[in-house]
Amino acid sequence: MEFIADLHIHSKYSRATSGSMNPDELARWAKIKGISVVGTGDFTHPLWLSELSEKLKQGTGGLYEYGGARFMLTAEVFNNFHSAGRSKRIHNIVFAPDIPAAEKLNTVLSGYGDLVSDGRPILNMTAEDLVKACLDACPDCMVVPAHIWTPHFSAFGSVSGFNSIEECFGSQARNIHCLETGLSSDPAMNWRISALDRYSLISNSDSHSPQKIGREANVFDCEMSYTGITSALKEKDGKRFKYTVEFFPEEGKYHYDGHRACNARLSPKEAIKRRNLCPVCGKKITIGVMHRIEDLADRPEGFVPEGSIPFKRAVPLSQIIANANGTGEQTLGVEREYMSLVTKCQGEFNILLGMDEAELRSQLPERIAEGVMKVRKGELEILAGYDGEYGKINIFGGKKSGEEQMTLF
Image (cartoon, rainbow, N blue to C red; front, side, top):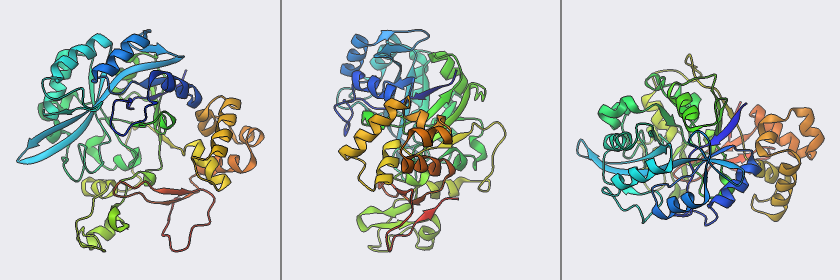
């Protein structure tokens, strides 16, 4: 039976994260969304791991249970090191099969950085040494490069990244089995780079608030266990790893190039024409994800490699409701409508992906049902995100005067 997993989130112990990122709220929102397996995030933080140890009950196959949800031990770490004379700042996700393995790994990692100051600790060790440390602590641990294209903190980032997984992870590249695409790219963009064919491409929310879990996710049809999930990823098994649920990458906050301080948004072509300088102030712009993929691509747009895991794009239901009603997403009216619909329709993902058009039109207000169908068909307009600014989605048309829009399909 298929199930949805979001394996990269954060806890209340990470900076700029909601205090509601606790087991109770995560379990509650997992049920609301229709997510079966949630990453714990931040198991490297001693207080969070202690809370997880106290509240979560050992389930079957290396997953833990609480409040009707299953949890998998995950954490994101910040590797800060130098390579070839350049500063490198790479974020990686770590999966652990159980709490004893996490505790053992934490003892090792505490020698490389302060695990208490932040749920996503800064470790003064190379990405290569991180993989060694994880596998030495427990051979079943797994390291996944996080949001691999974001400019500042990723394996391929324009500011401090590399041009290949081999450059980043050295002798341990053989132990990297999957990559997280991040909100600003989708699998189709990554398929343009033949060197990435051997990796499973996963998508997760990287959520800092419980309402945002599942904004990207993975769909499996395998044993709901740590080994079931990780083996499906390691083997890139399309029968067990069915597909990912993706943002429209244009909505991600690093899709285009630009300089947010000057409200300057540029396509890669425009950025190259301007020598990667801001057209307003003349300073260097932030090179976005689309530009970096163009730099490394050896295939044309639209290429689909054999054995690739498919994906489906989605827009969060609260965003569709707000767009349909012409109001802000955080309004009380949107919240009430959202809760009413997910309760009636067995979860957000069932509405976004599961219900057919006839069911949608019979169960949802007409304009919201229309919005869901327009998203499924890709019939929407997006003002691309850049330099830390999320893109803006317009589902029902009527763009504002003077705004340059990207129309999909």
